[in-house]
Amino acid sequence: MKPADKKAYDKDYSNAKKTGKPFFPYAIYKDTIIAGLTVIAIIILAITIRVEVGEPVNPATTDFIPRPEWYFYFAFELLKIFKNQDALTPVIMATFMVPNIMIILLVVWPFIDRGPERRIWKRPFALGLTVIVTGLLCYLTWMGANSPSGVASAGIPVSGLDEQATKGMAVFMANGCTSCHMVAGVGAPGPGPDLTQEGAKGWDNAKMIAWFKAPKAPMPSYASLPPQELEDLATFVNGLGTKYK
Amino acid sequence: MTTKDIGPKNPVQKGAEATIDYVDDRSGIKTGTRWFLFRNIPAGTSWFQTLGFTAMVVFGMQAITGIILAMYYVPDTQGGAYKSIEHITNEVTWGWLVRGMHKWGASVMIIVVFLHMARVFIWGAYKYPRELTWVTGSFLLLLTMFMGLTGYLLVWDQKAYWATVVAVNIFASAPILGPYIGDILRAGPEFGPSTLSRFYSIHMLVIPGAIATFIGLHLYFIVRLGISEPPWSKRRLRIERDEEDARRAAAREKAKALPGSANYPASWPVEAKEAAR
Ligand code: HEM
View 1 (cartoon, rainbow over the protein chains, first blue to last red):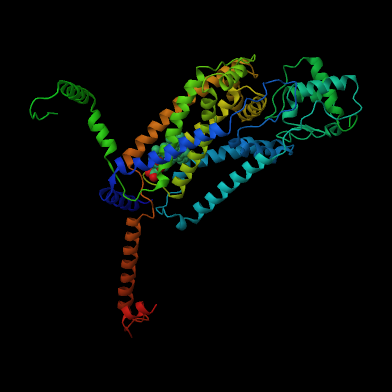
View 2 (view 1 turned 135 degrees about the vertical axis):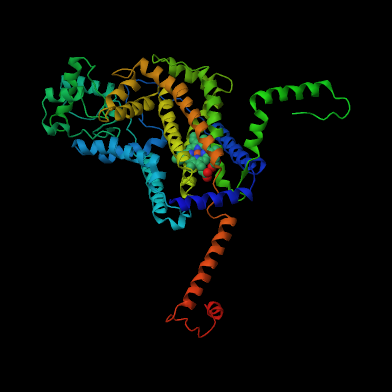
């Protein structure tokens, strides 16, 4: 806004105030009604849809659905969109670039859009942005709500497991791997990639163990597992889709 | 302030008035309240302008239900956290209701804050002079979401645990500062008992404190600058109509005065032309 526009706005606003009404009671009564209705709605929701207590943390089971709160579904979906890319850049896109650019845009928006116009129908860019961002958020949230959840299962249906691979599978299940990865239809469909064909990459155990110890985020590090378990786990994962199908 | 004496007064009333005057002399509370409550706002304010206040009330409700929950909650990873949540839900009188309100309140607060922001955005209410109101508000949105993230882990159940592991790893993956942020959130290199205590203290002390501070700033700006008028209030529309009329009249005058223009010499009166349109 140019100085003249600012002056004009100040003058116009002070006129609006002069011909206005006192905050109490003309605004506060509306505020009280809407806030009151909202609190009542929360109480009704709390009574009708009871909050449950989920499964206690027990890394040895897989029949749970690892999910964030619904208002983070969009972020998880964003992660899934980029998950199958192996290059580092796309992951950084989803976990770092995109969110940070959004946050910075959000905070500094008033310094970007400085035009004097306030009527939305004369601000086509702002209108378009409202529609697109809201639509995208709703769409991603809806996708997150409808994404197939991890399949309940006591084990992973792959055959041909030898003794070490069987131990490796137990380690796999006991450490929450299935909460991000799917193997032969068991586990969550993301944020991590499907590992059913992981053996086809032809990694050796040392390379796989190095990965477990220092993986690319958002996968957590498993450096704290005992060396034997890491070895078993690597054997299991490196045979998926080749030795164990 | 002096009170006019009309006959003898009840000593209780006298005492009360004296007390109020005593406090007001020192704090200015009466003047302040009057300044806050009876300031003028534009006449055409709309129902959409109630959402910010609603967000504030829901935050207050979260604080109260949260304090009650904190009286029973135990941040213990060896089953204690989970058991205390079970205890609140199944045994404590009204516990299920308080927990339900806190849980639903979190979702409703996110929705209300988002709608409030949408209202501000669509109205262009972040423009001069309210830019900093928006900046403080955008921090409030981020803090509100962070509240949800840290609170989710406290139940210490399966889905929350793994979802939080992933979320924290996302923070940790950021270049440069990421690893430090990860260590701070986890209270070390790994998820464990200290992580839960840390999330507990962030969730119930750090972020609520920050939110309260930012709400204070936000409100200060709002009261100081005044709440904006709807860009399509009756008053604005009238002004725009008048301006439009004036612009037309000026254009007509100009057209008449310009030799060689279609209206020169006016073959028929402009008023008639205007009416014919
Ligand atoms: C915890 C969250 C928030 C609370 C408690 C809050 C509270 C309020 C209140 C009480 C008002 C007065 C007018 C109204 O109710 O509409 C207001 C106005 C405003 N808020 Fe917020 N707000 C929050 C979040 C936000 C966010 C996320 C933004 C934007 C990024 C924002 C930007 C603004 C602006 C620019 C105004 C001035 C609007 C005007 O004068 O018309 N606020 N806020």
